[in-house]
Length: 195
Image (cartoon, rainbow, N blue to C red; front, side):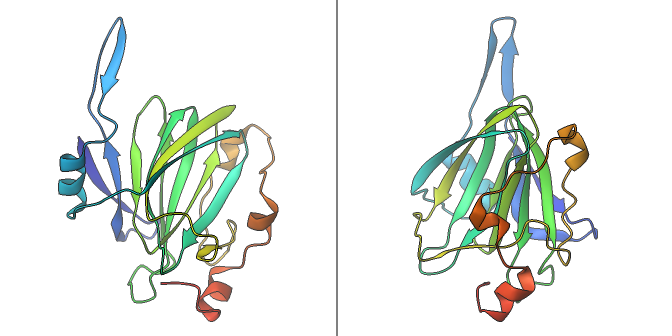
């Protein structure tokens, strides 16, 4: 398993999120890889992580989910992968005391590259579906709690995520009503809805 810290577009290494590339073994019959190993994962992130639930979503091209997060008392961390198709996956630092507050990292996760993104607590998470269909599976530390969930606008200009919209071949971005009306990072900060 290879583990990589990602840099923001500003060139800053953002502490927390990790891109994990598992080793796959294959031949003409197919392939095998460990999608998760407790011991190796804990070594990679430097702490003992106990996951509470597994989630699985299916989206068509252009669907953008995010930017989602949960506040205390039930913050969530996620280990995200695409088991079918391809997505552009993003983590935004929303920790007020962080030197990289408001900066983001992203990676293309696909069934082909088998990569995973670790998104710890203190980050907003979202993804854009690049392929015709994508299935995204993620392990979550912390249970889903409606009272704790929040969202930040996907196109917030202060964050300026470089979504690869050119890879959609003309397909429009599709959002849920909740995500379309999400506040900006500044509005979330003013409301006390950041870490």
